[in-house]
Length: 379
Image (cartoon, rainbow, N blue to C red; front, side, top):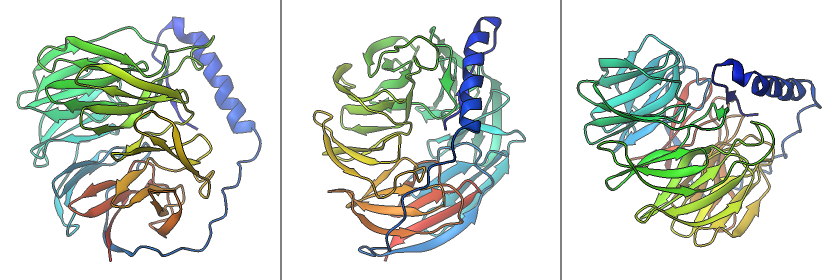
């Protein structure tokens, strides 16, 4: 079950009571559904473990950043490190002295992250340059681009800082619904536009001053209480050329032309993890861990794979002819992009793979809840 974040304030007490009732019901409800039994490994593709390392526990699904063949990642306890994906060699490591709420953003020179004390911390080569207080919590990795760092906060504000000095350059804020998800949202660049997910909408902002260039709704809040109205966009989003596709929590998925700021389509879909994709399809995990392919052109379903149901799957990643996902037992599964059939799987350390796998320099890198880092390559 996903975790929610409730802003402080007496006016939010009713929302907190509803949330408490929901969490209590979940903890005292029926026994967890057993996952679908795994068939024998099909072994239709050759994959080997090239290297492994450790970073520290992952209490939340902290995003990993790739720059060329370098992967930069963090653990919940404050450790941050960069590794060469080809050899697994550690390039640098540090600890920021505070627990971390959002994964790492990096442009290859600077690395930025957010602590649970609402501090934005900037590193260069593992050395801290500065830290700045944010107006609210953040669960989305900062975006570092153009000598600036951009932050999407849980109060649905977006802010920009100078990467070298830490000076705040602008703040764009707006009213939103009472609850937000305690997981990564959508924040990425498209040309000279900063694109953020705000309350079910993709919003294009000027990176120079934060002014709004366009807005496109993926989902519209509905319902009678805060939980029913929760339609936050969840990462990772999927981009191909000018088209950015994203999922709204348990509500819909849709695609937007980011050059024109126009919604191309939006379809109802339940699910709480982000999307993978290629030029033809989008791939995502349904609410009961069915794996679904949707046509990128119109959002219609292409195929559904059910062999990994109830295994609490991570977001996927397209690698060659495969879609790769991880599960709660630390297994990494390679599936055929054409129809979702199982190709092979590999074990890690028996703890959940929560964040999306990443590809760096031909090496597939996954991180487990226990802090194991595993680099896989084709045989």
